[in-house]
Length: 355
Image (tube, rainbow, N blue to C red; front, side, top):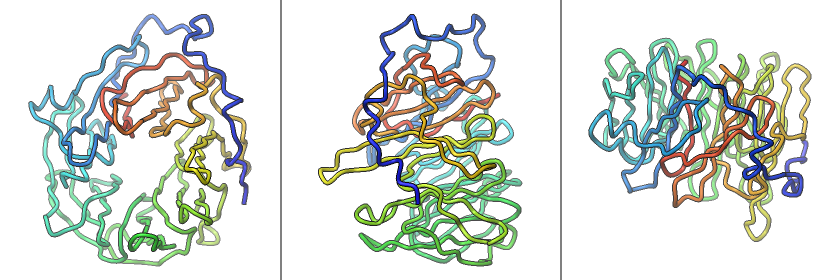
């Protein structure tokens, strides 16, 4: 398995934050669609929020859109945000609900998980249903029309990532308890919510993505001597095949590529990051960063967000110190830094582009 992500990359980054001459010119006309940022907030602080910007503006101070529109705080720890058919779906882990918002972030309806059920973790939306994983070994199927419960699946321990493809749900059965990790992905029939098979994967599976009709899985390993890995589902073999060690984030890039981040810690818990590109057509990984002039701090920052706007190819990287508002870095499709700005909340983790 490739271990190129353990390479130190700090020396390879060149900071251009203060070099205005090298920044691409912003188009004169702003984009006609907004981009929303989900800021997770901190556990128990009730400070999750959604902020908004327009990509082609010089972006200034961002404010809490959900609070402004709904007149109340969104809640405690926002784990996920998805756009589907001009509606926005948000999942609150601490507050234990999933809500449907309109394109202005006005809440339309919500489903609140019972107190005796585990916390909701991740979700996917497909064919008028939201599928939500929960701790305690449950997947809830929720009808988006009236936000009512339409079915459940019970198996496993603490479930994390989920993705739907061709009527099947791929669900990460992450861990049992402290230092007690699983190696399973459940394949569930989305219509009946019945288990079809259990796949063996790299230890501690956590994140699952569907990108260009392929299912990708990120496992975290045991945080010691067993590394995590990015894996892709092989439809012919019916198994997950490892691609690269120590991957922590991926997103759909341009030209059919997958962009990703690898993160490693040394014995003193010093973080090192690197960026890579994966081409699913050739099954090749390139360790050359897709960012031309990333700040040198990227080598040791906590990379909390990685997104690409398919409308213009702009690349967004979000960083967090887990205390203060995060920072969003905006790059053009060639990976050249345009600008950076405050995310307007703590721990920016997701974006939706309302084209």
